[in-house]
Image 1: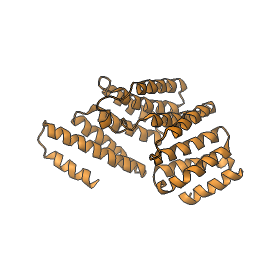
Image 2: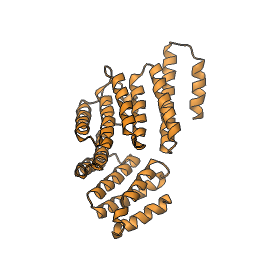
Image 3: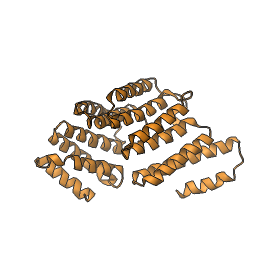
Image 4: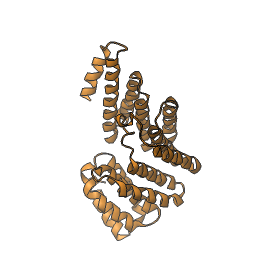
Length: 274
């Protein structure tokens, strides 16, 4: 945060309209996005929103519409985490409109997954499926020049796409449990494809898959998956990993008399001080 503040002070003194100044604004946008993500991970939601908006504004001044759209996509994702799907959908649609002529297929895929997220939370299955098809089609067109320089775009590999879609099917299954099987299929594919070095992502996959198995009333399998996730999750529980484990702990309560679930809930509770 201090580095961002220092950089912003320097930007106020920078000459307008030069290539160097545009690059400096882009650096500022990347710094603001990093600070926003750190704040969001620590549940400092007000600060995260301010910094995501600042990242989008700085990227716009830098002339980088793709980076601005990614910052807006992150802001939308935060809205979804706060159970504000209508707000998130509005933000995503703004990003889509702003990049309608310039977005690469991979950026369009990122934005389509965010749109799908909103529809899943709202329980709109037809709109959700349309967005998922678009995300998969855009992803299939491959990377373009410049994609590697844009956060979220460069990180959307096949495993991430499968994991995101699977988690959204799980959101949709809160409205109609029949979608939980599709959540399990997509998340299972994500786990199989994950780079072993992407430990945090794999933990999200495992916890998400466990929650999907609760919906299909397979509590023992859910408990097994949480047991696999916990060794890697332990150092990460202060942030969003902890939030997802709390979600599991709460959602598993109806199965608390099942021995495996009772035991794993006790372990989760001890690690999170639930």
